[in-house]
Amino acid sequence: PIVLGIESSCDETGAGLVRDGRLLAHAVASSMDEHARYGGVVPEIASRSHLHSLRPVVRRALDEAGLRLADVGAVAVTTGPGLSGALQVGLAGAKGIAYALGVPLYGVHHLAGHVAADTLEHGPLPDPCMVLIVSGGHTSLLLVRDLARDPIVHLGDTLDDAAGECFDKVARVFGLPYPGGPAIDRVARDGDARAVALPRPLPRSHDFSFSGLKTAAARWAEGHAGRALPVADGAASLQEAVADVLTRKAVAACAEHGVGTLVVVGGVAANSRVRSLAEERCRAAGIELRVPPLKLCTDNGAMIAAVGDLLVRAGAEPAPLDVSIDPSAPLEYAALHPVAAA
Ligand code: ATP
Ligand code: MG
Ligand code: FE
Image 1 (tube, rainbow, N blue to C red):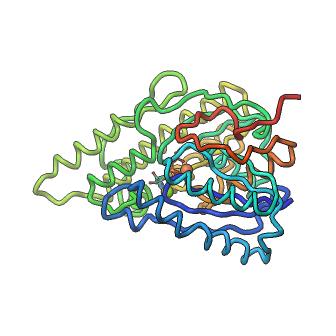
Image 2 (tube, rainbow, N blue to C red; image 1 turned 135 degrees about the vertical axis):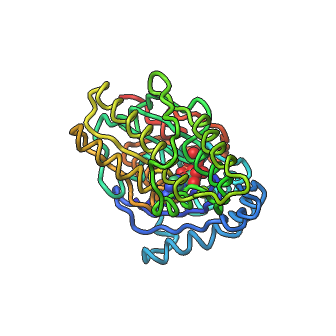
């Protein structure tokens, strides 16, 4: 069947259409600009924006694929984690469509969506694979087997800030526009990555820590009070430190667990230095690297449809129509209702 995926966990409203592992079309509307003047996502604005954008975004995806709503055979929707009001809007819309069409509904974990995004470009994930999720709210190393069936093993997580959060917060101190991650990436191009000595936080095991790095970068900026801040150098140095820590840990985890494939996903996987350093180090270590195309790294509906498609094909149990959101859902399984182990 054709699976419609709906994403509304934060400030992006996304709709995607996937059939048999292939992306047919997807559309995203972002309320990013409306949050910019507040320097961060305002939950109430995000919810209202989803309400405005959901129908048009579904429409756009269908139009682009040359399909009608009646062609949809299953609906997948993000049930968490995320902002509760934002999640509610997407879930209500998804329930309405599933009910009206009489097709099954699947509740999907947002981070499993980030992982599955890669399959739309590079095909099924090898079993097992190492996954580095680097996003606005998460930094995790995961051992992934069959996404539709198996529990996800958490090897490490951030002990404090997420990598994307570190970029976003330091960007603010640097006076860069919101959202900070893409701004850091942009201005870093003209900077010297060795200009500012920043720490490389490497906590034991497979965990991460970015708050010390964030503070060090902020201190450096504050030390320039009254003098011009060499923002490009600061951005390049911060980006280098983050990319260094992420890729070093991810490659070490692959070696330790004898895993031959590293998959880097989430918004920060769009970062140019994270991508190039991951490539360099994986090549040196003989590890296959997979990173989704830029548009599928940040939040979108295609990645949720991709999980739905995997669940449908694995014969997963659909969610009941009274299913609820879970704003702080832990990543144990990709679906709210995973396929029972054989
Ligand atoms: P989560 O997925 O953890 O719930 P989220 O959905 O808000 O959080 P994503 O949409 O996956 O996060 O990613 C957004 C994050 O990615 C932001 O922190 C943003 O600054 C960062 N980001 C996006 N592009 C880049 C880039 N080119 N360089 C660095 N960071 C980036
Ligand atoms: Mg976003
Ligand atoms: Fe996300």
